[in-house]
Image (cartoon, rainbow, N blue to C red; front, side, top):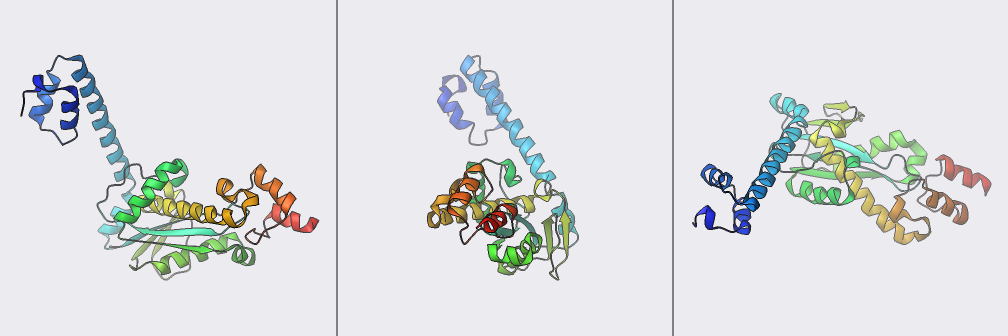
Length: 259
């Protein structure tokens, strides 16, 4: 290998991507070139950011670690998406993560940009020991109420898992299944498994609402995902209720009463 002083900034930058030795890092730190100093400053900041992210992820595994130590091997995190919209299903996901995974940026889906959710959606599916989605349609929401329909969607997600979970960690709820479980308030911000499930549920529902937008283009479902935005409410008044609207939800119910 060439001496550090003879290497270009680009060459040094590429070397820093390959888990460089302590000797290499020390030599770079002693290089007097301004470009190298700037490169090493960025490298140090990146290292600190990675350490902080690793520590954050470990904090998200407190519940899982306690359960693993207690003998529960397959722990399914659970969350839902779509309790509040005026249209479309409520979608739930169950996700069983391995003890070791690499999901930088894993967090409550509501705290992530769409692009980050999409990236993590693919990475979670690739790394999870098991995952599944379940849903309850608008008619079921109207018949049961949104809380019971959410529990039904979660029950279906668990039943769709190819690996039977030994324990369920659920965001804020408990569901009628004979599986040990724990509801955690704000669980999608406190548990890695629930955070992963929140991303699976959110992105799965978003994709479905994009498809439904092609069937019912007047309501802007691709943009509003069924939520009661001004655009959606205006379309509801102009075009009336479509088959995927939740007829027991106030704005939709009010429109039906007008008609």
